[in-house]
Length: 142
Length: 116
Image (cartoon, rainbow over all chains, first blue to last red; front, side, top):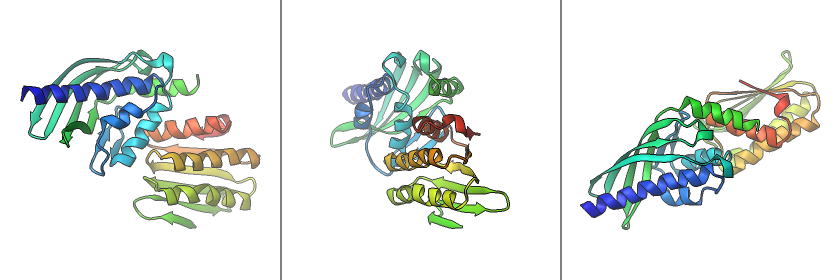
């Protein structure tokens, strides 16, 4: 069980590393790897949208990635805790967005599923982040 | 009125002659087929109504994939050709708004498109 929790913890950290890649302009390859790609994955972003199914989820990450730039990184995973129930797990995390993305501290929940021994995200939920929305608007004009 | 797609995802285009507007509504999460018919349908309608104001009500549209982005880019670039046309874009989703604003900027028409 301890090993499962460690594996979920590692998968959660890969997801937040993927966010850092994305905001730093390194693209979405790691984000793509962090998720299972099925019609049943879902995401609720800090900007408020619900995305349902991998195609929709992917489209939302593409919007965020379009604002990624090498000088816009610096997000921090402040804490994370994994809870495993068989092949399903959830992690609760406190994440601080990168300064240029508003810098807000967000409470996040991620649901992960183990398929063929691999833990990957099937649902992401983050607190609303009004400062992030404002920061993105500002980036449009930079 | 022209309508492409279905109730879950699609768009409609209508020229309102008395108001001098081309009114476009988009909704849902577009598939490739809907995305690919968008630009031609909208620009054809705009060409039929020279000088009409283009109103894109995208308040029910989810962020679009690559094909949808290419379609909006083509519509925004078309504004350059239809030089008298002004455009207004209405969005409810913040991500959709950001995506369309970025595409308008990429097409060089961000200053000519009013977002609300």
